[in-house]
Image (cartoon, rainbow over all chains, first blue to last red; front, side, top):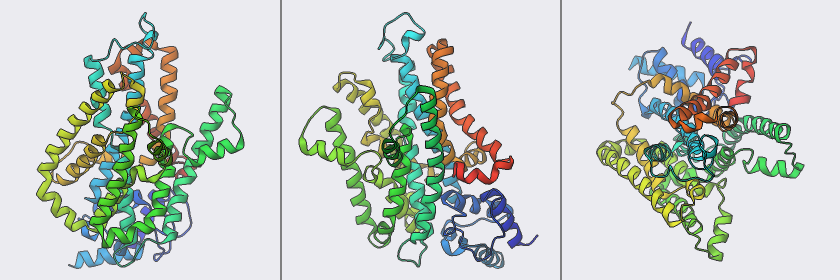
Length: 81
Length: 372
């Protein structure tokens, strides 16, 4: 599974509890109510564990976590650094 | 720090359960004593005993649960705003409020229905609406209207938290502590028409009474780097302050108890300023010692992810457990350690079990609507 699929699966299964249809990679996760304050914290924890990286506190920003595409771009950038 | 916030939420929700559970503990010591001893009630024979002080210590030590929820919510608003935007979008605010209100509405309805069936307590439609709007289905529910108001007001707080954060923090601290300070006059029966009016205008469900917790999370979210540096420099100060402020809140409680001629129920429901300062200091200390390993971080984080659901359910579960024990096993009320273990296990365990079962059942699609 690629990064997008891993993230989609986690968000659908764990954060949305299997509800909802297909997720658009550019969908704003906050504005659509998919993630809340707890969701943000869970998503960061998941990304750290699943991709075996440490997300610095300064990087937990809206720009990096507001959509699946944003998270994917952030991970690519982090891994290539 | 982000991951530690989840652990902090887990600790906070356990603290909420413990805080509510101690109410039953004190009731069993003073007001339900006749259920396990041949005395008339209220009976204050157990005042000043090790059991009393143990319960008091727990109650004061865990009195920061709701503060942590508000702090994390403020931090979330900073995250949801982002660095480039001037303030948070209305759409994000309304969506957040909607997902808080749906479970709140469902469980409030369940509670109202339960009270109607069990006690025949049927109210007028307007009274149901009033109780729903003011978070009065059960004592803990004031939190929901309160946090919803803070989310709405956050739209106007964000620019201040970004650009004038020091002035913003001082202002919100003055507002909250002034509102809290007013209650001292009421508690000590110092009556004044202006003070009485101000107290009536700032009820527990109205945001000024807890605004500083939220503002603190908001400011820290926007100025994280400065906060982290500040914490690293001052963490030992906060550790010592946490211990001293806990002692201060215990001393303050006992002093107020004596000043009110042992009016235990009024003092117990009072929120002293020393307790708020202790809670803030505890959060800072917890976040500052980030390299220190703690027991059960994964389990605490897991409980943290379920904090809203547990919060919505725990009061009713404790009420039911307390009522059943009062009626059918009154001897347990005389054994405080066993009583507290049963109450906390029920108050935390039953909501978690219910949430767990639903998350693994075909009804899991409804999970968000039930527990947030």
